[in-house]
Length: 461
Image (cartoon, rainbow, N blue to C red):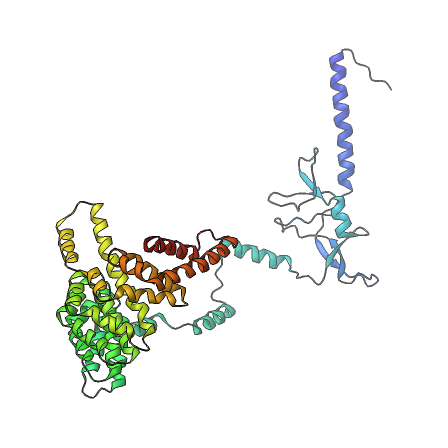
C-alpha cells in the first residue's frame, strides 16, 4: 500500500521514522542471537590437538575487569578492557558498547566455533587472578612469608653485621702507621746495636722509598736521619755505603732544603772519597747518582764541588779501567751543569730581574766550569764517546761537544781523529734518516742526531 501524505515535510518525517523502525528490528534480531558466557574447559577425547583444548565461554558475571571476547557480540561492562584487535560497536537500540573476536583472532583461537587454549601453559583461576590484582593495587608486603624470610636469612649469612665491620675498622685504624712513624721505626732499627747488616740494608731501602716525597725527605733531616746516612757513607761495609748513597741521592733530588743540609753536613767530601778510592762499580754508581742529585740546580754546591777537586776525581773515574758504564753518567752531569747556567742567563733576559734572581745569578757567576773542563782535558775525553755503538751515547756526546764549543773549539779543530769520526757518522746517519723518511717519519730520532752532527762539523771545520 503506497504511503500518502499531504505535505512534503510530513512525508520526510514519516520516511525517517520508517528507517529507524527498520534499523531497530535489525538490532533486535542480531542481539537475540547472542548469549553471555564465561570461560570453562571442555574435554575432547576424540581430538588430536596435543597441547590444545576446547573451552566453553561462560564467564563469571563478577569478573568485570576481564573481558573474554567470543565470535559473537557481547555487551561490555563499565571498566572492562578489550583485547587488542577485537571488534567493538555501539548498540543503537540499547546504547551499550559491544565487542567480539575479529576474524584473525577467530582463526587463531577458535576451532569449529569453540575456543582453543594451551593446556601446558601456566594457568590461573579467576579467583587467583583477582587476588594477584588486588595485591598489586594495595601493595601487599610479602616479607612475612616463609619463603621470603628464608631468602633474607640466606642473604644475611653472606654478609657481616655492620657493627662488627665498624669494630674491625676501628682496630685497623689503630694499626695504621704514618710515614713519619715508619721512618722513625726504621731509623731505630738501623741504630739498634743488635741489628744485622741485612736488617740495616733493609731499613735503608725502606727509607729510600719514602724520601722521594719532599716532606718525608725533610722529616728525615729533622729526625736525625741525615746524620745516620752520612755516617753510613764512612762505614766499612760496602753494602751500607752503596745504599746510604742511594738514600742520600733520592732525598736531595729537587729538594733545596735537604740539599743545603747535606752540603753543610759534609756530604760532598764523603761522596768524592767513595769515587776517588777503590770501590766496586755498584758503589761508585750510587755515589755518582748522589753527587749529580746534590749539584743539580744548586750553584753553591757546584762551586764547592769544583773547589774540592771534583772534576779531577771525575777525570780519573772516566779513565778507570772497567768504568765504561760510568762514562755516560759523567758526561750527562757535565752537560747538565753547563746548560743549567746558560738557561739561567737566558731566562733573565725575558723577565724583570728581582732580588732572588740576582742572588742566584751571582752564585752561578762563581761557578767557572768551562775553563776547568778545558784545563783538565775534557775537550779530548768527550769525543771518545762518539766511538760507542750506542746511539744514546753518541747523542749526549754531540750535545756536550756543542756546549763545550766556546772553550774547546781550537782543540776540536786540531783533533784529526774527531774529524774522521764525524765524517763517518754523517754518512751513517744520513742513511738512517732517509730510512726514517721512507717509513713516514719526517723528523725522526736519527734525523735529530744528523742535525747535531752537521752543527758540530760546521763548528769544527
